[in-house]
Image (cartoon, rainbow, N blue to C red):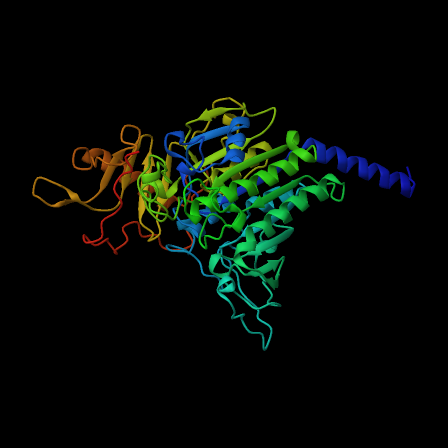
Length: 493
């Protein structure tokens, strides 16, 4: 049967509209260096900086109180988020990327963005990439050297990015590589302008809001997956002048946190204004703990890491224990809390289960779905353990309520007076990681160490065929911390 062109076009439009309505839009907001204690709903006992929009998101969604990033710094935690695979299985074994090298995500590796794209979603990203990519600089082009507000420059205008986000599953990209190259604004695969660091949050937020508005106007029929890895409150700490004094504490950092909350509020308002709130899943998390020392604002009654020890880059909870929120109207119970162990790598398997997508053996090897939890049910497969990684590439493993850190403790000695070779904490009873039990429970140390070794060798922590890591994984890390350098004491608040 032949169909007239106009009728065919109309049927296609109706089909796309039905498809868009049948699948929820998804907005994933990822703050940069925001600690567990910086959202008032998560730690009301000592959270003084106003976060009304994130508080509302908590009230309308589900708060996860035992959520973690795979690592305590930017690059590795973002790798795990987008691939569903532990960062230390890649060639990046410590530290963070400075750009200028091939993308850390292999070209043939499926990402969270490409998962959505395969399901018919329009995928876009606005913000910080920090997973490396190469620069093809035009002949004769020079980096900008000017006033301090633009000293976070990167590649010159006109530079092409051959292996950036638009080659890893995103249809559109606007942002920058990392904070020290923030002023070089990239659109899709090219550096298009220089921008003052103080203007970056506003520029990204406006672009996200504009994208939502365009969808609502019918300029895009597909449902959207929108990834918003915002640049704040990471350094440079550059709140706009109008935010002076609005962080309650007289310091630019709390003001930047308050401004960050406002930016998130603008995105949530755009969804509501365009009648998209009911059919949009909003997820909020952070890439690691706060970069400020955990006791910085304690004199004001504000604990950036909440009740947890230490901060960003640390193997202790303050480095990777993050606030995580999911709002899904009609599915997730509003105002609910869940203490299920979650890793940000789990987003991949969660949405794959929703789409009934069969994950291949060489994809998302460390991702465990928590979709049933969102629906108020018990999952058949639960995350029981999680591997932690710090800035220097040192390891820890959590299994149930026990956490083993592969790092000596010179404050705890064995019968012979030697420092403890490991740190073992019961994080359920000792939330501040103050009481090292390694010498008291050597059998528990052995069990956890064996589990870690197995998870490393297997190349995965989920059911499936054994996989290869991209590089040799050394769990011991020869560079043991000097006794002269003490780590942060537990946060007593």
